[in-house]
Image (cartoon, rainbow, N blue to C red; front, side, top):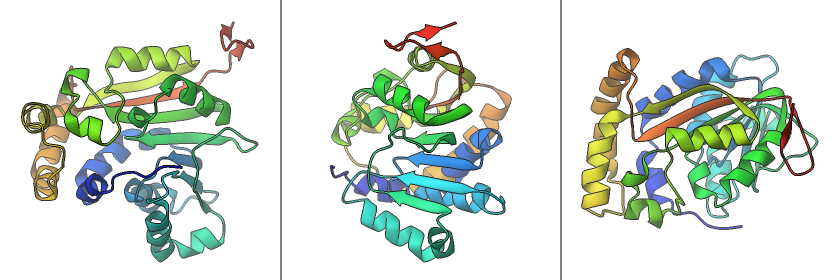
Length: 253
């Protein structure tokens, strides 16, 4: 068990346009038996529940959050709004990390989580084992290693990703890539100025709200027309390949 700094999660909690954008990009790939890994304070959990899970006849969401200081707030938030789902066990909150087990999910979602895991290769293989046949893994991560900052370091980011790194990670873990794209190209410059050059280790909630209200809708429209060659974040959607593995983890055709 560990604790996670909550100030940045609080600052990002009201970025409604940002999270709706992510949901829009991944929604065609979501199933009905979903696991969210690293739910934090439940910000994206609520987006999922309100915009995807509600209305599905057999919808089920398992939420995993191992940070001891986040779990009580997560439970309290979900209890207030989704008491009936918790009572019916259509929503289950786990105070542990994701691990493969007897239950298989058709979708596993990780939003700003993989960069916190030292052994990302090993973890992706664990997720692979926890997915049903043709199950899908959705990953949203910070991009561009040259944007790695003191803020990244202070919140426990081991790395930022590139298109090439995610491509290799997915394929070596026996996933077939369905979609991969950079997102938030307009966020690159302010992040570089504030956090790389300026060495700020905090996210200003007022600036975050301003950016979400005015910049996110603009960059979303731009990227609908023109797919950027870089961005502040990367989105990957991949599907479990049914090729067998040998004991060493190597794919067997």
